[in-house]
Amino acid sequence: MFRQVIGEESKKIKNVVEKGIVKRFAESIGDLHPIYVDEEVGRQSRYGRNIAPPTFPRVFDYGEIEGLHLPNKGLIHGEQIYHYERPLLVGEELYCYTQVKDYYEKEGKNGLMGFLVTKRYGEDLQGNVIFTEEATIIITEKVRKAMEV
Image (tube, rainbow, N blue to C red; front, side, top):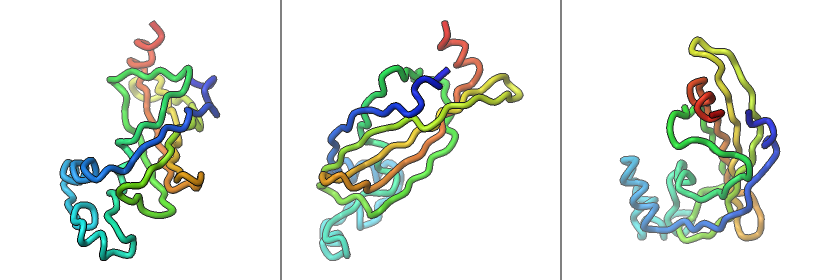
């Protein structure tokens, strides 16, 4: 179903680790650690400013991959792994993009399921990778059939 997009990637999109969004994100996940929201704590930290929570990259724009059209409903979040070279600094700009790593299918008790594996990247302005996020999206047989209509 998605084998034709394996290896494809989106264009790099500029994103900013904005202070207000970091605060709202921290509130929404129930983690108001001072390193995320208190400017004085951020200034006194080894980073010299506030940082973003580890799952903050969920709010970034990663662009679109041509030929990859997923429905807004019915997908199952299978797995998600973050790897960081360093924390995200509040105020910094990043370029983010997605690459399709794999697509495979398995028979399950509810029919044939598709597994779409993506990898997202966040690079600083010099092109250094700051973080990656690997995710597996599960597409149930019901969703697969609806997509083929």
